[in-house]
Image 1 (cartoon, rainbow, N blue to C red):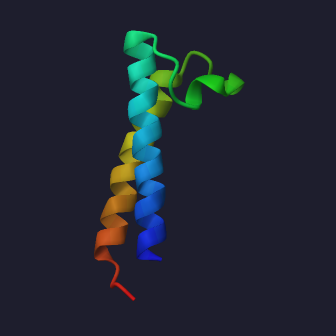
Image 2 (cartoon, rainbow, N blue to C red):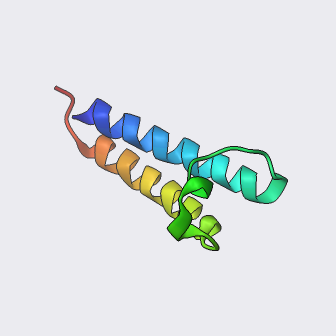
Length: 66
């Protein structure tokens, strides 16, 4: 379970960072830009993904391995 939480955290962190790079540099990265109902709220969604990633890392760190 700990490894799954870490993997999900890494994916969320990577998507959040790639989305912010897309917003500020116009590189074609991230999946948030492809979701239509988030149009206009991409920066908020990417920051939320980064915060979610750190929350997942915190929960994974509090779990016992095994």
